[in-house]
Image (tube, rainbow, N blue to C red; front, side):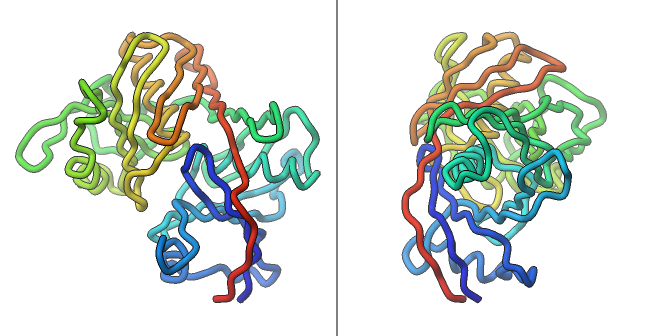
Length: 276
């Protein structure tokens, strides 16, 4: 099987993007894992597979595979990269268009060749949407992790997120708590884990331990989840600049019941092919 791919990234959160083979055969989870290897493969956080539209009002249906080979529902930076690639290919016009994914419809706006905004939908705080085992919806949940208790906010952006507010992201125990919370039994489908430091009402610092990948340089849905949780707690305004290890994203969310928008760069690193 030959795959012709485009290597892209959004603030260092990197992807391979390729069109689904005409015969419908995709790499196996083991093959995706080998391709994701930084030293012996191509190296990526997620693989993004482009399929023909399944709805007349959309331009593409895309699927997302994590570095561990597992298919997931949504990827914010990945969606921005797909939108930028479709625009580069001339497959969509400048302005707004709609894409489709396992996590639902995503509106995209190409603001410049490498600057894209996407509508990540309405943040869903119902624990069943993640899913997360809880007796009822709450602003804060207490998790028992390794014999100690941590407080999290929980929200779905088409994929599940747990958000911890920490005094300093540089000192946050991401390597210890990230994998423990990702696989906590109260998250039956695992969860992405964000560590948020609130600088002021319009600025946060964030590190994200992504489900099936580990810590990444940036995470688009993670940025939206952190802002949604911070605003729900009354600590952030409607426009927030999110500083991640790979750079800065902007998140705009008017509030409950409204759509949340993510804006940032989406760049092509190189193109290539691989035989597997």
